[in-house]
Length: 547
Image (cartoon, rainbow, N blue to C red; front, side, top):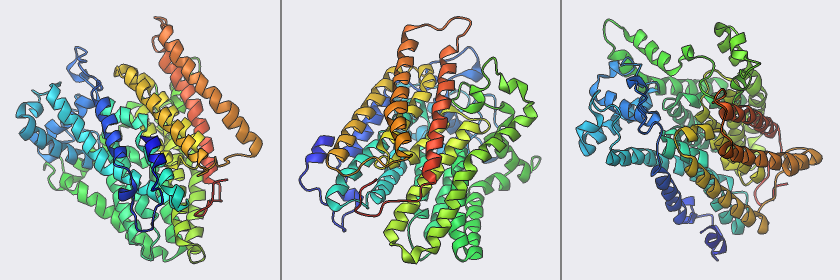
């Protein structure tokens, strides 16, 4: 299908065309089919009743349970109800979406699917189909559209006869991300809602306009993303730095006030019911505090499971870092280390955002738009990687937050981006083994690699683009000719060893620990490269090739 699109004779894009008219219909259809096929496999916690009522299932049961509790309990009880059994610990917008899905399940699929308490562990086949479609709905309507809109803008600088090829390749690579597909449509989550809202917010924040209103819309959408999944906070330092630069360039007080009012209004819109309808004996403020405590459970400790970040990697024996640091000091140390990671990139983002706004009249509007968008995508990925590597209470699935914006820059850094996409999926492999998604994992990664390979051949064969130099020439060759290929071989070898060698009984977590340590090192390398990219000032103007 990619080759067919490549050989289509009418490849010239006119100024009047939109991405919706240029994009071949088979691409969204093919991506939807990929997701449906993954959905036919198992989900997290399927059939797992560990003889403990509180331990039944995984994220699938958690999401179904939230539908159950939101439609049966008054809103003031949502964040207080039975924390021992998948207590609601996502922000209000997730709770409202669970409420709507719960109503649909109750009336369309039967009341038994979401009966309070009695439906715990409900895994009937047709209801699984319903649950899968609730994920597919937000994926197609929110994430697909945001990816298409942003990749269309990023392809503008290419000549019209090359633009469609570049656009199609960018959309394919961004939508075929195996990590996102496996987590949302296999493991079962709704990450594409928050990721899609965040990408839409980036779109409006970087649209060139004489009015500041598009950036206000972007701030509102970003607040919606935050209120769907709190881990979207990983983007916040970069987003704040970018918008602060826009405010400092001109009319600081006016612009900053607009943004502040937008943030307050957005949160008030979603949070006021928990204050207004709070029980008298609890009080409105205590009710809001309960929501906050559910969203940020510091009592859970520095990390859970075997996640590929610094704290987990350094807590392996004999280092045992977590045991050596007082528990009360762990959040502070995590905060300081995270700050030290993202501050350089955020500072550069602020300076460049401010300077571009000041010089806007001297620069072609389209160049400013693309440059701002690329800057924001890079800085948000860098900020997300900082949080993933160093912050408190990190989950393995949070790496998707760094992956999503960076995957849109495939045409600029095809070798690095394709490697990073595979790496992020590889780091989550221990989770996929728990979910019994190993075969689905290998099929999806292989499919993605085929798409990347064909896309690269189209781009390089037609001279649409060349690999952008990230490092000095000698270091660049070392990185992409030696280091990254070696890491690819290492990841494959570890898979082979894990299949052929059984972990000793005294070290049952041997392979997850190895994944954690090596994954942490490779993600730190990715963070370093992404930070360097944020410091590159040169961006390509329309019609030029990438150096």
